[in-house]
Image (cartoon, rainbow, N blue to C red; front, side):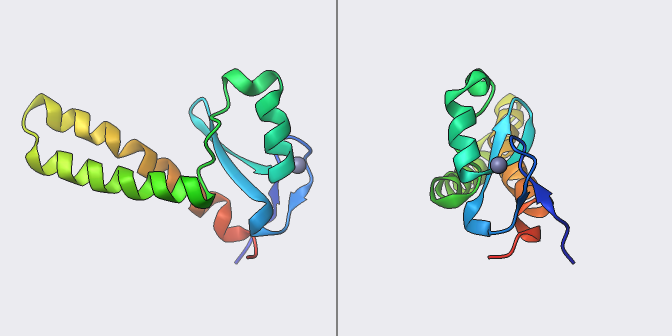
Length: 108
Ligand SMILES: [Zn+2]
């Protein structure tokens, strides 16, 4: 089951997974064409748009680190810092959200 994913900048459908960039804008995950993402990064949205894409190589590295750090922290922490360790898990939530909402609908 797939649904069309539309670029946040040009409103055209994103058809190839390699061309899909998911990024965090304030607290929302938005899909982009790779080229449109680069344009928005340099444009007016630059203060709101995370310059680290959620997907792709760097996103996956961040994802893996977030899991490791989050879990280690959860194991060794107690009391108040246990709550703080949950903050480390937020990027994991965004990454999974980006995958479920956008990436899995776009063909590889
Ligand atoms: Zn676009």
